[in-house]
Structures are given as C-alpha cells and as structure tokens.
Amino acid sequence: MITCQDYCVADPDALETPAMLLYQELSSLSGTVGEAEAKPTKSMYAVFENLSERFEVQRNKLNQLIEEEVEPLLSR
Image (cartoon, rainbow, N blue to C red; front, side, top):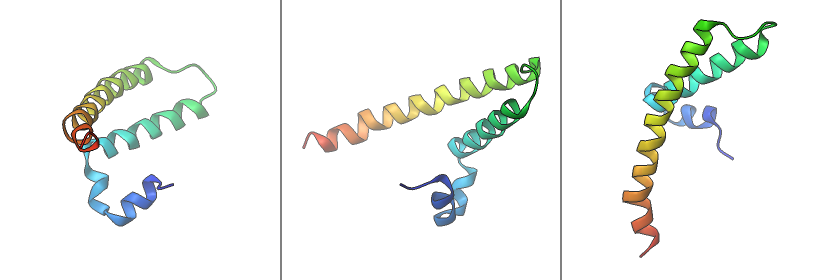
C-alpha cells in the first residue's frame, strides 16, 4: 500500500496540491480535536465546516475525472 509519505517522497511538489493541503489540514484538525479533553470549540467547528466544503470540491473533481477519463478506458 502506498502511503502519503511515499507519494510525497517520490514527488515533493505533491505537498502543494489542493488535495494534499486539505489532507494535511484535516489531519491537523483531527489530532487537535482528538487530543483535547473538552468538546471542540466553535473555531474548530468553523474549520471543520470549511474543510468539509473544500473536501466536497475535491471529491467532485475526482468523481468527474473518474467519469470522464477512467470509465471510458474501462469500457474499451
């Protein structure tokens, strides 16, 4: 299985893509919330909402890529 670290070592510029930046921010938020001894703060919820919206954009791009590029290759 290829991990994020493997991918980024192979291509250091991959860290700068919107998807990787989103991944890093989600990981950071997850760690912050997971280590807290209290419920998430309002600002944590705001960050989560922002990241959720950005995730949807990336997911839609991936689904479009699959539909337009991958599925035609598979149907050959």
